[in-house]
Length: 257
Image (cartoon, rainbow, N blue to C red; front, side, top):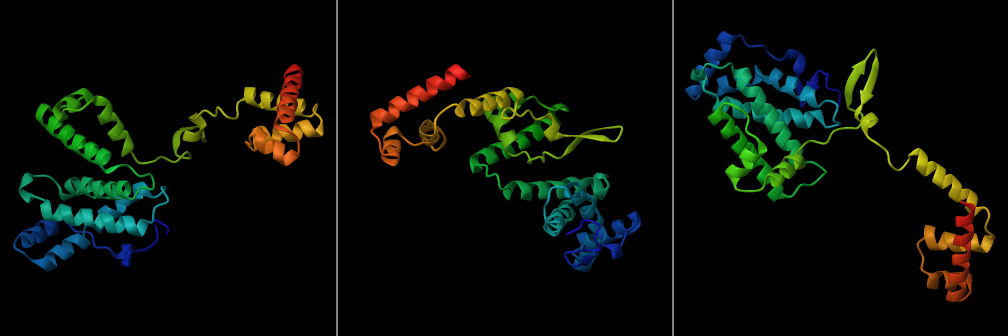
């Protein structure tokens, strides 16, 4: 689906209500008294928050209807846990909750499977990280988290890396005068380097210097991965003859190359 289409999951996004701060306060007071209708109005009045969050994932190829539903779950959790007396705007509290719910869904449904124990370690480490940050008013180092959990810092790093969302090679990382630099432009290709091209070209030229039987034997041995015994059966000569022809052919190619 297209992210900017009017309807998502049967909800006409162009007609979503926008609540004023006064309306939000009045509705929340009714919610705290158990008013279910007020809760529904509050949810509908904040669905635009969900839409704004799922925009961040529009280029991932995910089904946006699914993300919208997951985001609504995060919104409902935020409403059920929000304390109006804290002095924080609801949107400030709700957005991280919605974002967290979507990221959790993407991790758990990722095609790249991560073992449950590694995920548990990562989530526990995130909790410890948050607790240490709140305690010391600064972000802890990996060593601090590892010490608190009683495990190696390598295990923490591996766990964090395992739950990272995959990134597209076509993700733009830099713009300069209209020219976009993508992640794939920064990834080296060791299989298609100039040196390898030259070696392959020399190999092809050397193969042309062999007779048809030698070419056939080398093709069976090194391109199809067959044993000398299998080659001898296919060609109809002894294994000793295969070995001798193979050796002579390789020596001839080495001299040429």
